[in-house]
Image (cartoon, rainbow, N blue to C red; front, side, top):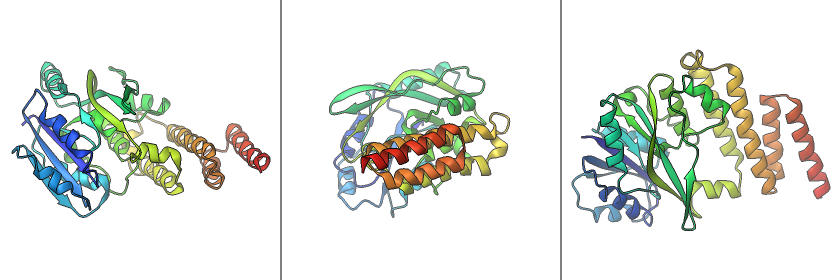
Length: 301
């Protein structure tokens, strides 16, 4: 089998049919779809049962977060390539055919393929992120320097690459980037000029909810995942990166969270983030940023 598509889902019964039907409607047919229900309390099982296609497998597990759900899907997969689709997103109809043609043209050599995506919000679509450069000798350095993340649904991963690299179940934020950085330290990649899927932003989506309220627990979990990659996998990255690259990456992320917290007038959270910024890097820029935060708070009162 060519492709194993894994959809982890939790209480997304209203969105799930469009995701499933976008797979069923593909012009390329050599695939399996594994839907991992991560402890849903809605009618997810009944929704899936409406589809009689033998290529669809439904697996239920007690709620254990998306990393565990994706790993469960990987463990049950048999395809040469593993892909992920969130349950509130959908594929473009010719995507798998386009992907298969590229893999075939590449001599069927195992590879980590990245494709393009669209973001849909209020019915309007736009390009999501810039494509990665092909032929980049130090793609990890490029990703760190440009503060780039790769969405999990933008990848088609040779299943043999996942034998010793799975999602780390300790993390439910940055878990996909954590995996991709580990994979890119060892395996070849290729950015495709192929439009793969549409990421739908809605009121219940993680992106929208996160932009409206910054949770300090999320910030800390994000930092924990980055620190884990640096501290426990350094031997994989030492020939590509310096310790300062991790410091720069943390600094960029913390500045982003600080901006969001200030925009939402979450000054208590902003102060906590500012402390992490100074702990990560005691620079003039960060000191000035923190002083501006204090001044803004005082003036605002």
